[in-house]
Length: 214
Image (cartoon, rainbow, N blue to C red):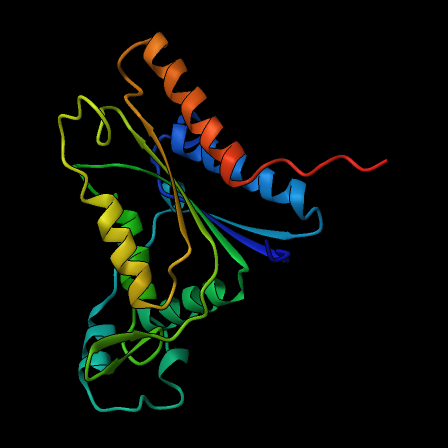
């Protein structure tokens, strides 16, 4: 595995430190730091601080002529916010996301981040075959918490979140995705304990602890 110098950690739960997705995504960050102790971590808790949706100026600008004016991303508004968020993602060697599943898919605040980061002619371009990602690939680790089950035996609800995020990141050129489903969190202590054991085992397989050195 390539050495990681910087980690972008995004969380999207309104439950803060009581959130399973927040806590397990932090565990992923800690595992990455165990492997690369000098990596810098940038934390964005959008579940707590929110993130404005793209605004009217953003819409008019992207619907206008190309290329953009050189100062377009410097003006106040969500186009400048979009540029900052894309630059933040570009600077990260690894991305860690902690998100709940809300109504079968991502919460609105994570959708807002996606709308900022997926920007035509900036994070993706176009070809005769369709959209082409313009960002370099990098590992993305996604902890997904759900009160009910959405994968495996006995699943009673659809999962639009996983294929959606796969399509989102593929659009901008990122394909190295690793999902950590933490599901059935509200079905009792025994079921929760089993879910935590399962997702921890998955983490140990995907990111084993480094061997201690003498």
